[in-house]
Length: 342
Image (cartoon, rainbow, N blue to C red):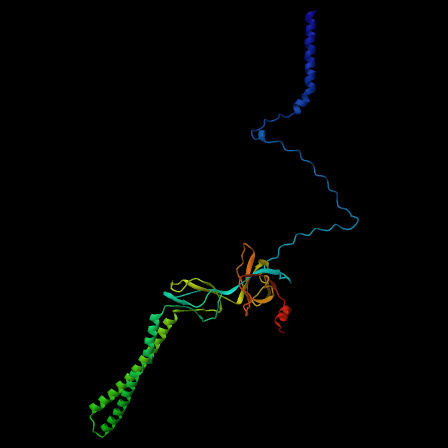
């Protein structure tokens, strides 16, 4: 009896297990095995789930005024494409047209200096002298030689006597009163007298050239100014030895030089001969007219600029060098009104 119950219990368990397997078998068959993560994937964070973008509705008719379209930002002007606007001014600097360091081309001792700082000098004016006693003596000797004419007069007298003797010898030879040898001797003496005169004339010309050479050597001992201007600095004193050192510095301020720095996009808008109005800094801020002399052909790429040089007349020496200023382009009508021309 007990054995029969156990048999039915075993059959019931087997049937139940089979029913459970039949229920879960389709899910187990459709499920794929999950692969093991690689070493790299272990350290990669999972990507965030993507959010779908909202759908944009198709454009339709819009009531009311249309929305303005945004314009692109303006591009910077290119090379030579922008003109100089009326009233546009630029920084500039007024400087002397020439600043010259004056020295001596020969070795010597300074004997005297005739000018000092801030003195006005003319072109060709003697500024200083070197010790020149030897050169002065050489000039006196050369002048005496150039003025000596005794030898020349003596040879001229000998030539005149030789011509007279030659004329008498010709007459005597025609009368057969003189031998041929004596006649030829007299003719030779006359020719030698003529050559003697030519030699003395050449010596006289050579003496004049030697005088000019001595005077040139003496003039080198005088230091002269090559330009008209003002003495900026005096660097040496009498008694010092000069050998290619600077003795004085002279600056020419008539005319003045004006240096203007313009941006690169204005290259081509300025040409030599154009006029600019120059306004120096106070208190010398009276407007003046300057003319373009040089336009640089080399641009400074680092700063985006180029230089322009202007010439500013300064006949009364009213403006000094070293002033800051403002430069602005002048129209043709303004130039005519300022200069009074038609």
